[in-house]
Length: 304
Length: 280
Image (cartoon, rainbow over all chains, first blue to last red; front, side):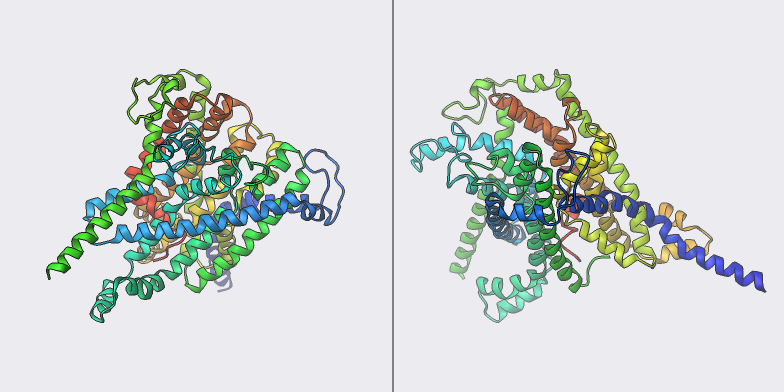
């Protein structure tokens, strides 16, 4: 009797251990690859002379004090904010218009499928392809300058990425091209989920197209709009490559963003300490945003 | 009735016109990229610009194919992406199985951890990765890329696979369990074959993520024979800014595997794209 209960105990214990057998490898990897570097960068931000030398001293919040006194940091912060707001809003507006087009009954199914493929296209290219492509198109001798001059919209070739007042809009423009498909596809999935009955009922009640859009489409899409926007903000504010490869942060500091600031501090000035402190700032911002994101998600009762 | 018909025709015209404009906006740069890749260097900025190259030449492609360093970019990208994809799939399937089929202590904490890792910006981990990779002597090897790419492909893979497993009824596993099958058998003999579409979607998405990665490839490798395609394109930009045709040829070649995956696995690709934001 005793052995039997002992056996069954180990059996149920064994059973309890089963999930850990599957989850361990993934968790160990994520802890090593994610948690450890995060802790490392946080520790770095409180030390001096990291990476470049072997001995460090604890300096408390000194690095953050220096960082917050650096006007270039605040310029980068402001530029990141401007860049993110314009990109995300444009992604959303363009994405929504395209999604509604692709969902319209006027288009025949083969046209829809083809158009959808063609409209997602910009999303699949790596950032260096996107930037070299637009550097070619927006080159002062390039095709866009040629046509703008041809139609007398401008009277001299413009170096879009090099001129004050134009560099930031140009970079945002490039990002919009590469980034809208995510919104389009997500919103299209949302639109396809809206019941046709709602629209029919509204038509019977005499609602026009705009009223239907305002009172059915938007409220029905709201959860998706919210989560797509939140994700996009988190993704867009970490911008580095698009800016670095088109304007390099210039002209002057006009397109300097947090990403390029960190990169330059680390690999140009070899000031890894300050770069670490700035990394912690962007990390904190992302975590705060993602906290709101997962809140929104869990209120929908989604995920795991 | 007639005016209603007229309105419908106008509506149709407007919709098609808008669609045409958007398609042009999305595709013109891509078409121009392909056209430029077949031009001679002298013709790239010719005025007026011509879509059809006057002297159609594949010299830009030949310059890439005959250069061993540039060929190496492709091999490196292929190796890194394939290894990362295989490993991500294996680990994601195991982890997702636990998340989807078992209740255990710490599950909630772990899943919150996995979800939130997606928010961590790659740029914030650049410095610690750089110092760690140098310390463990992975710097300037493909291992540096393989190990760091996992940090972003894994959470996504785990979430996607968990989502797929959740859609599959548990009655099948229970039947196997009654027959005395182990959890290992249930996973690999029952769940994995049924979840093939989900696995394909995860694989495509992971492959494209690794293939397109830029920041870590830039900072964790240095010698030209360890570079991947995204960096190769950038290096062409820096070295001699005038070989635009070669840059575009490299872009076309670099985009080709991703385009093929995208066109043939469109359904899966879209599933991957939306799995983060759209919940059914």
